[in-house]
Length: 326
Image (cartoon, rainbow, N blue to C red):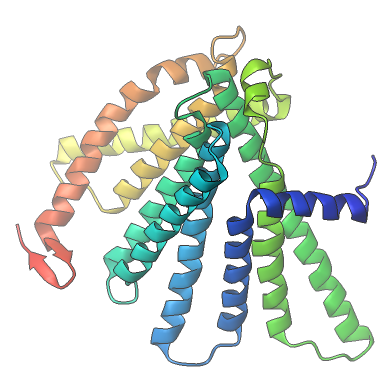
């Protein structure tokens, strides 16, 4: 295997900076905020503001990435592209001054929902006007594998460097503060991982749409024999729980909502992963799952609505200090 030279790494880094300049700046800003947070010992309010800034940096990163990919595919001019970027930044600024998670617990959920929505937007932004299902699947497969690879690389790199620091500390009696490890985790987990991920995002979407792409065997094994069986197990558990509710006539517990939402997200992800091979012979688990998934969701959606109705009935709806009771 040919290892990349320092020159090629620098060249790839330059390409990422030129292609995604604001994303790189947001990543560096998040890294600096993490550095400040590691050594911070001030008031809890200011600490909460720093945490909110990091969360907003994540929202800005994925929203800007969606905008840039959409602009690239649709051949936007430089002025139009920067206009779209400024709109995205404006949205993030509004969210920063609107959301106060340290004051309202509900704002933590809102930030989570915005993060989930913006990440989903990255998955289909290049195909809003153009593209086909085959290209859409290939693009998302690349993103999925790139995320896994980036996570593995980051974990191995951090572990290796942390062990090296421990060895220096032990062998040479060099006192290394615990803050150093946290800063190292920040650099590897935020900056290097993000740069590595951005470097692997496809640039030629026309080629992705036109070519026929082979299905990775490892991904098929993972989806067919790990992901789908786990989803079936969770579905059976939730379905039995729904039958128990009907027999005992007791309203569902709060945790069931999280399980149903998680099942839905990973179910849709599974459908995306198995799309190219769902009609091929020999895929016993895959074909019935892809055909019956949405029908199986109907009783779970009913159960989700019952759980939400119970929570609202018991506690009402609280929003920015105003409380409604049902």
